[in-house]
Image (cartoon, rainbow, N blue to C red):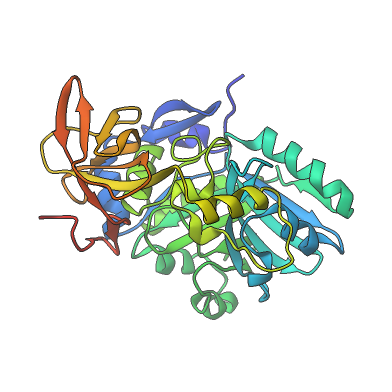
Length: 368
């Protein structure tokens, strides 16, 4: 059975083209994916991400549990509301999921995980939480709207109670705050996102989500679909679970070494494998590539290098850059003479550092 968010009829009334996304009926665009992409880069757009899974973790030993569960160190977050991005690994060092966890109190942390991995994530979390007497509560009562772009924060502020606006304005990046809307609705507002732009992810009660979406529309925020969300996140150098990493790929092989903390005395799941990889080197690496020729780089295309073959992971036409960009997984070592097999033709690509775009601008070395 196809799952639907409470905004499903709203999307349809706005002319959205709907597609199946991990079992959910979701908007891919509302007319023009490229227009929606530019809207977020230049002004503000909003995404229905209520298909994401919110999990509350409660109990005296919750921090201890998260020290065991996550590859990144939860001890980095000590200020209420602060967020941490991490991978959750299996015993082989593969990525079960990537997620964000918020520190709300020593006995209360909130986690947001991917929609497509909901069932296996919840089973894994519950399996390991039992030994720490941690209560795992899926918050199906909450919806999420992501408002992203240079104007996003100011437009959201206008819908928040006046008494909360100053505190919200001071909210640092990668942190969250409980505020009240102008209509008296409780909002959990996180200054996070998946587009490379500033903005908020707003968690709120399901029964208030349609009214809040409509209030954002009235304030001048236009809707954007999952198509623009994908091109925005790839330009911003952000991984997509299931495409750029999965249970057979370690964080080191997914350019996520910055999310691994090998702090002394912390025995997290998958650590021995990561330590061995770090000591002995990885067999594979993830790189960013740009194609200056016309054409599109797509998932699954064969990549040829001097060290052997690899493949395109996430690939797309970048609306901001006007050319094709991609992540590729290739053999380890110095990367040179890289080509992509596109329908039997070997097309040269340039290896570049990512993100490809930051603050709406191409990064150094991306454009010739």
